[in-house]
Length: 220
Ligand SMILES: Nc1ncnc2c1ncn2[C@@H]1O[C@H](COP(=O)(O)OP(=O)(O)OP(=O)(O)O)[C@@H](O)[C@H]1O
Ligand SMILES: [Mg+2]
Image 1: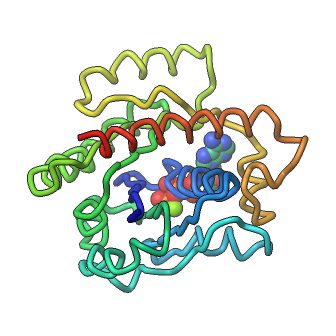
Image 2: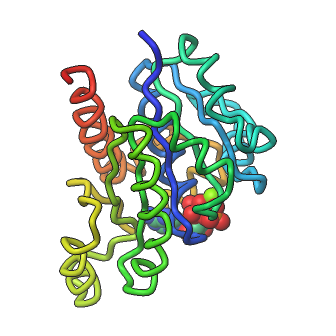
């Protein structure tokens, strides 16, 4: 079956696009799926993450040069993979981001629980709505990242989310040092072994929520 495509997007720099893309891709790869990370950001952070070790369980390729032709290039590769995860640059209206949203089945928008970050995400919301006019099966979810549970600010920002216009994924990523360690060591979260058990459970749950959303497409 042709790959399902997940685009991780946000205008806001540093919101966790690369972290989310690589944790999700690593978890899918560890589960035995054929996974490609299409690194569409010229900073090539995903590529550096994978290159930091030799055991990352997904293919990571620099596709940043494809710009507005990315969807055409990836469409040719759909049969090679079960999942293609696109890590995009912090630019909602960049041709490569628009191109990613043309092909994607699911757009994930990581947001840090701060009002400033949520406001800065409004441009990507508009880009997703524009893309949905031509790609009506495109689903979108906000993903709360760097969550520090039980803080007042987290609760306040979560209170703003129902008005944002894109639903919140019912799985979050907490702020955890082990996620940075995955990047410096070139691993998936499973690859860190027993020192990352809680984080591995969190990422596994996130993967399951994402897979449940993607199954909806097969049923429509
Ligand atoms: N859940 C988390 N826990 C701890 N650190 C995190 C988490 N998510 C992201 N970070 C850290 O925050 C920084 C920014 O994350 P990341 O590079 O994933 O964001 P980005 O949106 O891809 O940034 P850019 O827009 O520059 O591509 C990195 O140092 C990363 O290690
Ligand atoms: Mg990045």
